[in-house]
Amino acid sequence: MIKFCVCIKQVPDVSAPVHTGRMVLNAYDASAVEEALVLTERYGGEIDLVLIGPASAAETIRKALAMGADRATHLVIGDDERPDSMAVAKMLADYLANKDYDVIATGKQAQDTDAGLTGSMLAERLGLPYASNAVGLAYEAETRQLVVTRQGDAGQEIIALPMPCLVTCSNDMNDPRIPTLKGIMGAKRKPIDTREVAVPAEGLPVTKVLAFEPVPEREPGQRLEGEPEEVARLLCKKLAEEARVL
Amino acid sequence: MAKILTCISIQDGKVRRSSLEVLTRCRQLAAAGGHTLEAAIVDADAAAHLDTVKAYGPQTIYTVSHPVFRRHLNTPVLAALTAVIEHARPDVVAFASTEAVKDVLGALAVRVGAAALPDVSSFELVDGGVEALRPVMAAKMLARTEARAPRVLVSVRSGSYTAEEAPAGAAVEAIPFTFDEASLRQTLREVVTAAGGAVDLSEARVVVAAGRGVKDEAGKQLVERLAGVLGAAIGASRAVVESGLFPATAQIGQTGKVVSPDLYVAVGISGAIQHVAGMQNSRVIVAINKDPDAPIFKYATYGIVGDLYKILPVLAEELERVKA
Ligand SMILES: Cc1cc2nc3c(=O)[nH]c(=O)nc-3n(C[C@H](O)[C@H](O)[C@H](O)COP(=O)(O)OP(=O)(O)OC[C@H]3O[C@@H](n4cnc5c(N)ncnc54)[C@H](O)[C@@H]3O)c2cc1C
Image 1: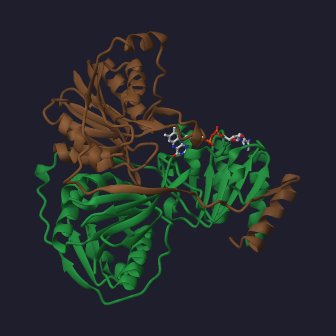
Image 2 (image 1 turned 90 degrees about the horizontal axis):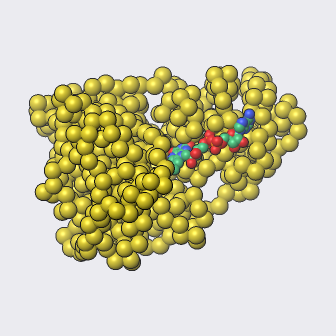
Image 3 (image 1 turned 120 degrees about the horizontal axis):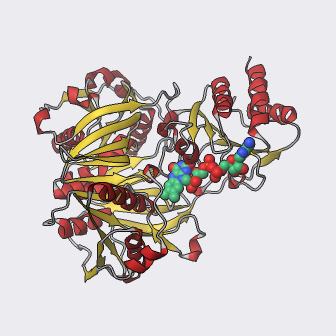
């Protein structure tokens, strides 16, 4: 039996052109949901979801419920609110403070901001041992430990955490399942506890996005054409004489 | 006047160039604004790195040495960084954005009551805080972000600045650190190190990266040969890491490493935005791909449309000839 709480976020689809405004379940969170499903299917247990976001984010909750999670809490904030990681972690910690989950899982970062702070901020607030950037999870029933394979700088670190604990997941650990029609229908009947929350306005250091700027464009490149030998010769010449990198 | 502290990253017993880049940036900011520059080394044998760090000009270097740092676990690292920050009381703490730093930055920010600006590509000190540019949306855009707080943590992408020596006679202060390993709630069972290349990817001057176009062992050998001739580190797209052909430590991109070499050769890589997020700041990009419409060609300085299995062997040969 493992009681999971997976923290999920709705993000813009970074693969789509910006103006389409298509919103998706953060891919790293989808991997966290998938991994929780695999472990609860094997060892028994339950998966709760929690999401902080505007009312419209409910569709993303349905998507994760359709994958197979049991129930969800939607902490609703205003449409124009952009809480930073510090504020999100505080709100999640307040919500999770007196709940007894064995494992709290988050994505290792959000696909849109790529900040990667919320998971460890939450662990610190809840006083839980944690591991970040997990690329594999296993459960050891005898010791009630979560065995996390995390991608470190030089290699993979295998870390055992006693429950309760927190883990942040990479999307390199699995391919999240696509909800089935049955899953999608079933998700409509699963409970979502919706409550309004206030973004903490004081007492936390704040970071703010002032503006978005385009990434400086690269100089247009050149195509080198011809037979392999010819192209190889041409490239070497250009790398040596034009680009001066050889 | 502010106090800037740079935390130095050590890997495989060596100071990482990326943290010397950050230290150099902090030194320039300190000089321009009349601020104080300090550095901290947390390592099993911190004193061994003093000479390297001194050459980059901090006024004081704090060391925290303990055998527990021989292997990475976030609990002791957090305790040590907290001890340094509480002792030194810096206004700004700067790090290189390594996996080890990503692992602790959020928790540390909460513990020391600081604002955090992670994975920035540039930063400035402004009145009452820090302003930084952060690549967001898989590096499709830059977010100009500010943190106005009494204490700000900032982690910087490798290659954002150039490391330049400016030796000064730094004072050295060892911070007393005791750590009861019995209090550790995590246990590190094992570190599986990939038999990777000799050159550290995120700091390499030349990178040859393989994508799904590299289909088999024979293709991998072609990539290795090219990397060998160029003295390059070997990178990979997520697709070939998943296929098991290349180790996960080689992955470049949004999820993997950020590289910024002088020369990046993309072999059989389509150029998905999540991959480009990790390599678009390379100075010269060569793309070899058989699909003339592959998005990677939008970023390539030199694009070659063709079969990598035909091009790599002759390219390696030609390079050997040129380099000889
Ligand atoms: C949240 C998230 C994070 C991600 N993070 C990363 C990341 O960090 N890094 C990363 O790389 N990806 C990442 N991805 C995956 C990314 O979207 C792409 O799926 C991946 O980069 C594709 O790898 P590829 O270019 O090798 O493969 P493909 O897209 O399959 O491209 C293969 C290319 O090889 C060419 N080719 C095939 N055969 C030959 C031949 N014989 N000669 C020459 N060319 C040939 C093809 O024309 C094609 O362009 C992430 C995805 C998500 C959703």
